[in-house]
Length: 412
Image (cartoon, rainbow, N blue to C red; front, side, top):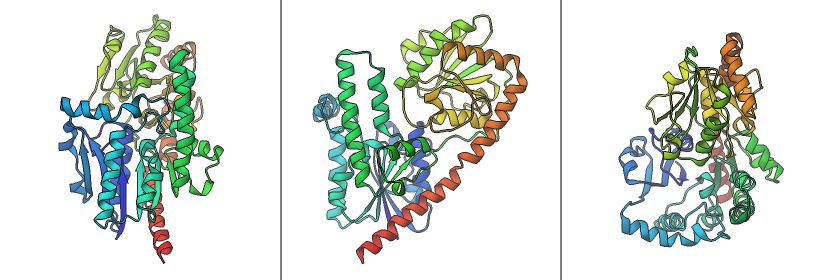
């Protein structure tokens, strides 16, 4: 049996709510279902998620650290994480808390002492990829695969550029430079890197990562291609985890800048996603609905006039855009929202940057049903052809098998 060890920052399970967790869960479960693999997962979970973990049902051995919410233990973790959180020159740029590092490395040393030897180790998210040099010292014969949900130094760069000045901008610059150096250094230690879109693959190429070690995969997304979009309402959908800064800021930007330009229409802006702040809720009105988490987004997608994704921060492919396009609901987004997707403006989506462009596109959709239906049909077909998750999973498993075969040859 081939031994595949997965290490992640956040435990995956079938009902996990965030995009990265869904991708992690999808590929982990695909590997576990392959008869040639014996899988083991090291990860972390909050107490509320512990009952949802389904590794045992899939035959995945695991060691899950439960992040206690007990006040005393939280305080102790806070003390441990002081440097990683507040030191401007922390080598992980504040991304990887010291507590998590200690737990992971301690568990790996324990497994090594007990005789466990993985053939391939998959490092999920940049926070864990950054540990590649340390992990290699313990399992020096294992092949390492970096699963880069986002190339994080790009996000750090954009945060630095977004900051207006003062200490915040200085700190963002220091952390960007630190992440750029150490993320690329960690990838260099790995045998392969799997960016979750071709845009990030090209970015790594520009930073001298060898082409032969870059193997892009398709991120998991809710596939609505079988859904029939009818656009029977004048609702504009905004969709995403609203506790994330980039989603909060983007929704507020649309409310403040675009909705006033649509006052002569009867459109309604629907914000869907868990964790909306009190600030965001304060914008609620007859024309702005803060819906929070919903169990099933498909009825909202089916009836919506369009999806708006005016992203102001972030890096990597935007799963919400893939999901919107797969539903056939026309998607309006900007350079950040469409990066890594390579869709054609006016054919698969509508490109907007300014408030005026968003307002104009929305009015055009209201008045031109033929164009809306053309974009709807083209977007569905584009997603079917370019983002086939099943084919991507086959390539991913073949990559891990290749790592295991190389491990055997090296041992000889």
